[in-house]
Length: 106
Image (tube, rainbow, N blue to C red; front, side):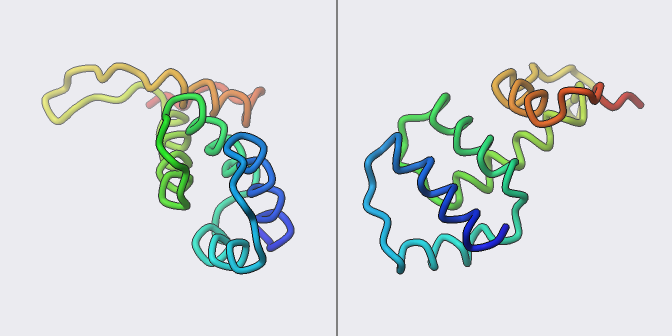
């Protein structure tokens, strides 16, 4: 993600929580999320605000991107072979990002 996309991402955050975005804030966030895909980061922000009341940080965005990516792998099992309940909000986010892709099956 480039610096302009990071600014756009923070603008999306600002619409929800009214935080002040200054140049230093933008630079700090960019250093922490610049390796993420912009579309995934936007979905991660939306996922966070749909499922959490915590003040959003770059770590939340990174964790939500991972949730979305994991949801795209399809059904999961724990170490004992038991099915794990899907993370439905993350599955929905993945489907918004990849509307024409079906889940990966093994």
